[in-house]
Image 1 (cartoon, rainbow, N blue to C red):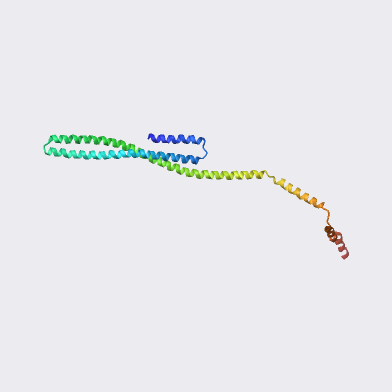
Image 2 (image 1 turned 90 degrees about the vertical axis):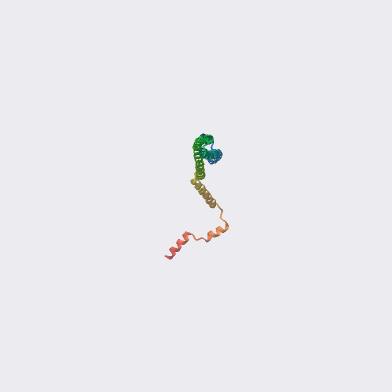
Length: 216
C-alpha cells in the first residue's frame, strides 16, 4: 500500500543522509527502530478504524439479511390472507433490503481485500522491526569487538614503535663504558694504610715456587 511505500522511502532517505556523516552506527540503528515503531503504532491506529468499518459493514449485512427474511415471511402471510396490497408493500421492502444487502456485500468484499493487505503489511513491518532489532544487537557486538581489537592493535603498535626506538646495542655499550670507567678509577685509587699492610702479608708467587725447590 502507498503508506508503507512512503514509510520505506522515508527510512531509506534518512539512512542515506545519516551515513554520510556516520559516527556511531548503533545510534543510527536505534533511531531507525524508534522511527519504525512509531510508524507501526500510527499504522495500527489507522488500521483499527478500517477493521472497525469492516465489522460495522458485516453487522449491517446481517441486519439487512434478517429484515429481508422477515419481510419475506410477511409477504407469505399477506398472500395467505389474500391481501395483495399488503403483500406488495412487504415485497417492496424485502427487495430494498436485498438490494441493500448486495451493495453491502460488495463493499464488504472490497474492504476485506484492503484489510487483508493492510494486515499483511503490518506483519511485514513488525517482522522488519524484529529483524532490525536483531541485527542491531549483532552489529553492536561486532562493533564492540572491532573497537576492542583496534585498541589492542594500537597498544601493540605503540609498544612495538617504542621498542624499535631503543637500540639494545647502544645500551650495552653505554653500560660497558661505565663499567670500564669505574675500573679505571679503581686503578688510580691511592692505596690506604690498611691496603699496604695487607700487601705485606700476601705471599708472592716466587716465594711459593721457592718452597717447591727446597722440598726437592
